[in-house]
Image: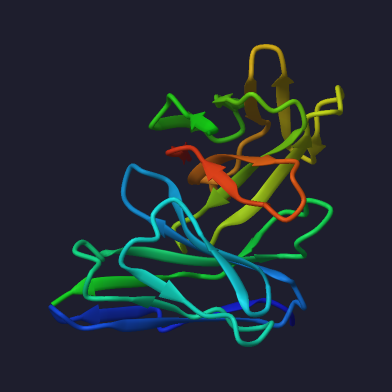
Length: 113
Length: 116
């Protein structure tokens, strides 16, 4: 079945440590997105990519980095510069044209040790 | 910049009743898309319904329908014959009609509880 796979489901980070969240899709979608979800704040866009080897900052990109070396993969690194990383992270993808809706993965919950 | 407002943080209704969730948005765009997403306790985001701004007819999907008022910038979701499985967070979202920039702007959500 086609879909979006995020791993791990739960992740813990120590102070000063970088961690990488994985997002893989087999939907052959061109566009991929990373969102952060905090209680009472809905979803906020971190980074998005419309095509391989290209990505743009979203509304809250500081302290995060991404890469898009393959169409099916869009990993997100939470760097030590992100001072409040505890949140639920959702990855999404879309065809990237015709304004098709985004499909979401099951999310990764990141916590600070 | 676009903003999406959901003014009802929580709602609850009895099973089989009808419930309406409100959403307003602010934009200077004339062409855009609006969505309702559902997030059950499993945390997966599921698309419920979608509306194109250029269409006057309100979208419907089985028990789910919208009341789209473009002039008022209002986009409410009506759930008819509510079921226990409808218990979830519901998010309203906005997307500009701008090729190559399909970013979604989300509201803060409404937590809906269906009471048996």
